[in-house]
Length: 291
Image 1 (cartoon, rainbow, N blue to C red):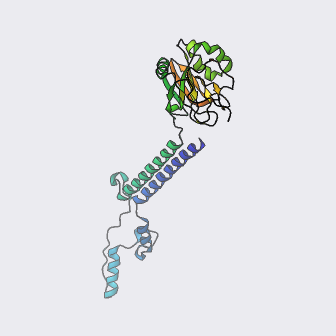
Image 2 (image 1 turned 90 degrees about the horizontal axis):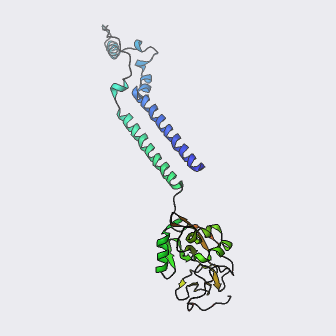
């Protein structure tokens, strides 16, 4: 936040300096230029502090003629010179110098504004989506239907997660084994009148991080790398894994399932089996011993 404030202050100060410089140059352009005033001071004919006492061009010319001819020349006095009056800026309008000065200041100001806006856009916190954010999976009734139509396992690649149903009959055991972040989905069936609750499991095996697929025949998760096995809600049933599958915090708001993939909850310890589910058919991978 301090960096953003510093950038804004620098942009404002640069704009003030540019506007001040433009105004000073405009005021200098309204009268005689510096070069013209320097030439006037160097001209002997215009020397002296009293401008009205300086000889006119005709008087200088007549004096030069008289010096060459040696005769008296009548000098006809001309009307006194009019004092210099700076032109009215309103009547004069915008001079070419002022136009270029203001164009230069405007372009520099536009460039600085764009640079400042780009810095703010880069530093401004952006909303995130996909893995690491909160993902709205959908209406819980529709999600449960999708789980059933996918043989009990629903995979969501944008969240790198498996979603499975949690039976209402196991909720009482779950209350003693799981944290509130996990129970919000597990107890949704009983608390909000759905056919079942929900569990969102991280796809990585807690053993060595392999992606764990489901086994349709056994209705378990079975890791192909080292043979770790987990029941349908991610509780460890065999193999070298140190715990059950990790899971995400879940919430059900107005019947809509929201999974926070930025909050990973460590899987349940070995021996946790709240659903009592055994393999419902042949295992896809042989029973693994410890490796």
